[in-house]
Each structure stands twice: as structure tokens, then as C-alpha cells.
Image 1 (cartoon, helix red, strand yellow):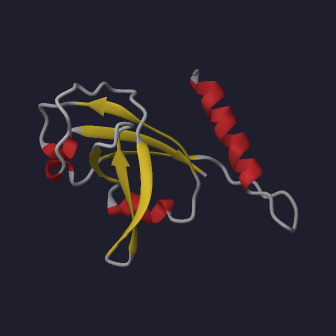
Image 2: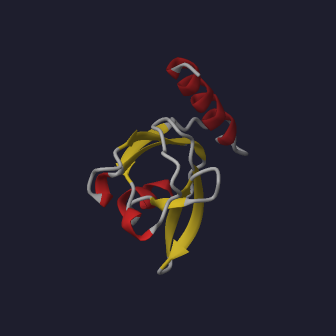
Image 3: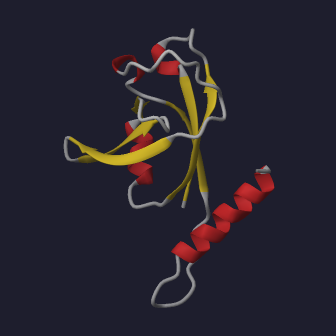
Length: 119
């Protein structure tokens, strides 16, 4: 999907999700880019992971605060969204998430860079 199409569909989805009782409320799509936290605690299968791979984000709670785990389509957990980003995501709809960069030889906290679009 071309970037322009992706951003346009994200803005449309945010506009539809933002409809309220008062009238039309527009929420711009926000794009976050971050390295996954907690990577060293999760074992991933032997298959190589390519960048631009779609990942799944699931909302959880940790110590009473919102937390989000990031997993591959097969169910292998890669890590977590950093706490600073998780607080900004609270109450937002996640539109798309994918691995922007994969470096299997990097230190664990810089192994997977994720791009997430939310509104």
C-alpha cells in the first residue's frame, strides 16, 4: 500500500471514529516510531523476521497502568511498547503497526523498531 493511501485511510478512519453526539470531531492520525522494550525476555522462533512485517498490538495492564504487548502473526511475543508511548496511546484506536527496522545483531533494546499509527 502506498504511503499516501495509508495516511489517507488513517485520517478517514480517525474522522469516522471521532463522530460524537455534538457533531463531527476530527482527530488527526498520530504516528509513533519506537524500539520495543523487554525484547531480551522473549524468545522468538528460528525463522528470520523481515522489516515491514505486520505485528499485532494487544492492550494489557501492568502495575495498574496501560501496557501494550507486540506479537508476530504466529503468536510469538516480541516485546512491549515503551511506557512513555503507552501512556500516549491510552484511549486511542490503533490503525496499523509494523516492524520498521530489524537488526538481529543489535543490543536487545535496539533490535526491533516499530512504527505505529493511531488516532
